[in-house]
Structures are given as C-alpha cells and as structure tokens.
Length: 306
Image (cartoon, rainbow, N blue to C red; front, top):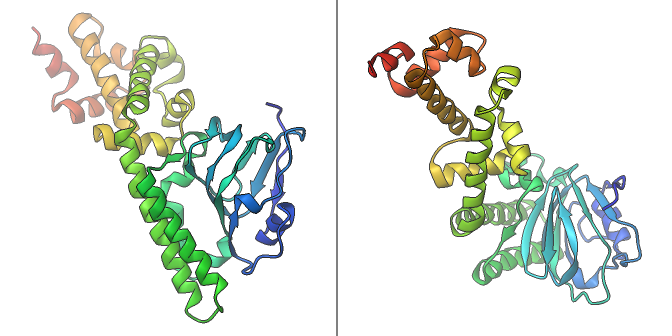
C-alpha cells in the first residue's frame, strides 16, 4: 500500500462535510451512521486520515482491507476500534459490493474539559492499541455497546441543557468501561492468537540472549520487544499481565536470570565476565538484580552447585 501523507481533520464539523453529511447537531460529539456516509470509491487513492479528536467505530460489511496502525483488518465481521487524536487510519476506498453498517462515534477533547474523563480517558490503554488489535465483539457485547451509543445520540438530539454534558460523559465512561471489560475477555478467549504471541516472545528473547546483541546493545527494551512482535507496548503489557501475571520487563529479567544461571552453573567465567556478557556495565547492577530475583548472590548460587 502506498505511503500517503495523511489528511488532517481538525473538527467534527469538517468530518461531517468530508463524509457528505449536514452540520453536526453538537459541535463536540457526533454519531455517524455508516450507511449514510459518502465514501471514496475503490478507484480513489489510499485513504490516510489523521483525526484531531477521538474516533470509536463499529463497522461491518466493508469488503476492502483497512490498516489500523500496522495491522490489516477485514471488516466483514463487526469489530470495535479506538483511535486517539493524531493517530492515523489508512485503507482503500469503498467497494460496490460493500453493505456497510455500524457507526462512528466522534468525540472532541474539548467536550471533556472540566470533567473527570478528561484525564481518565488517557488511561484506557486500548487507545494505544493502534499498532495491533481491534476488539472483536460477541453478539451480546454488540447489543450492549450499540445501546450505549444510541443513548449518547438520543441525548445530544434532545434539547441541550445544563445536565447534557454530565449525562453524555457518563455514557461515554460506561462505554469505555465496557470496552475495557471486553478486552480482558478477549485476552483470554482468543487463546490461539495470544499464545502465539507468547511463543514468539519466548523465541525472540531466546534468540536475543543467545546472540551477541547483549554485549553490543545491552538488554532488550520493552519497545524493542513490542516492535518485533508488532504489538504496542501497552497491549503487550496488558496481555502478559492477564495471561502470566507478569509485565514485559519481568519476562525480560526472567530470561536474563535463566541465562545467568546457565552460565554460572556450566562455565568457569567469573561473575564479572558473566555480567558483561549479559549486557551489564556494572557488576553491582547485575548482582543486585540476580539477588532480587533468586534471593541468592551469583556466587552463592554458583557455590550451591559445588
């Protein structure tokens, strides 16, 4: 797919105009019906859009592929995906075979000013999953999500009064809390995909620790691991916490200690030499980590084999 410079959409009013819709009833929040949108056709160049607001969507019946970060999705099935301001959505235009249904919820950050959700929304980690994973909803979950979005639409369709913002914010927070719950379910139920990630993590760490990278580059970073697994750091952390109870950094350290034990028990290298081969500039740092993990110093561990 071509590397197209993204088009920046700054306001919800501008989004309405691009999609061939009348002006929004509320300038800071809007629910768009896919069936009513005027989308570019397949003969159009790649769509590449950057939004200046939050974009949450449930889409079905889109025959072409859509790039959600680095991952490609087929939207024949209903999937929920979350885009934070300044993230990029890419894909091909609409196809004549499309039977689009679903919705797009647009939320401008200005709507959240002065509310508890202004800061809390940044803590919902699925807004950082743009390099990996959409949320696959069950039929029951779709009913729940669609009901909340319908409540949001009904609220801003009604006459705006002093209660409107609080009620809309409350619905939004409920939607995000359900999404968080459904993501936790997905970590567990999509076992094949998730276990493949665990297997790839194990292989990646093994290859790294068995190469010269430790000496030349030091310990692998969480970002390095995430990039090579093609997932975001937050998604990987949430997945590992759910499935293993450990963070990515803890998995790196566990592999390090495993390698250190192997060298301490099977070679005559000094502790300093082992620390160097494992990417440590200072012996003290290695010894401290080893003792934290094993309750023994490296020498005490080695002596237990003699």
